Image 1 (tube, one colour):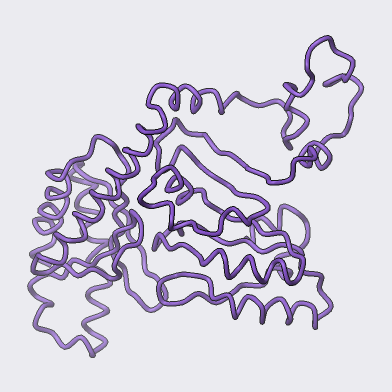
Image 2 (image 1 turned 90 degrees about the vertical axis):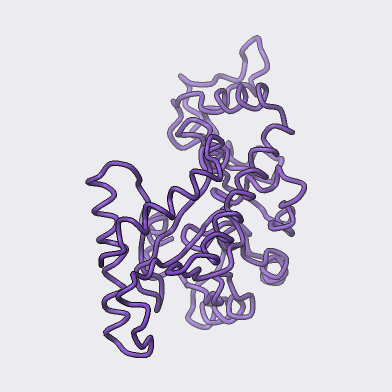
Amino acid sequence: MKKAAAFLGIGTHNVYFVKADDQGKMIPEDLEIQVQKAKEEGAVPFLVAATSGTTVLGAFDPLDGIADICEKYNLWFHVDGSWGGSALLSRKYRKLLHGISRADSVAWNPHKMLMAGIQCCALLVKDNTDLLKRCHSAEASYLFQQDKFYDVRYDTGDKSIQCSRRADAFKFWMMWKALGTIGLEERVNRTLALSKYLATEIKKRDGFELLWEPEYANICFWYIPPSLREMDKKGPEYWQRLNQVAPTIKERMMKKGNMMIGYQPHRDKVNFFRQIVISPQVSREDMDFVLDEIELLGRDL
């Protein structure tokens, strides 16, 4: 959000951050506090950005509660569904995005969960009065003339900031035609089933600890080497040593050349692994391999 504010030229000081709960979900009550605070400070609130599928935890903000506040204060309600938006294709999991129909705009990246060829992003806007064209068009006389012999609605370049661009929508259209809506739904369902399998296996294994029960495909966990398992978790030495485990294992797996798994800290949590499952070619055996290999690479730490 800070980067977006900088690009827009409104200044990063005009971004008001809203508290999230322990699961990473926006707290609507604090959103209203921030709106009122901004108004008291002389700012003019105009947009609220919620997230469906956060980067680290895979959390889904409570969209209905946020929408209520946006309607109360006449604020544009945007939902970043870049990662989690594909759950809408699943009849089983679309409930994660309950309330998204109340959003004014939604960002969606089919190149993420659905694995369309990168780059493949969509901005969906509820307004049907050609809002994007009214915002972005400079009405240049040498482009997109309105007196052409065909339906000029097909000239979409004036709706985007960059004008000339690749036809990124075409590859996703082809993918959708090839797999069908049911095929895309099955891809989402299979991915989330594998994620749940991995989480279940982590809870079964000695030395592995799940940080949060996953809501989506983000599986966050620690590997705890045998040398740390009897240490007092209340002492600082335990957490200092555990903080080095994931980076060391990551270095070893990269040098070995068999896996690439991200890690990071989060709030008061020291470095942990974050496994994102999205490939339709991944199997349960692959999930078992991930855990086996992490244990192999880290058991001597």
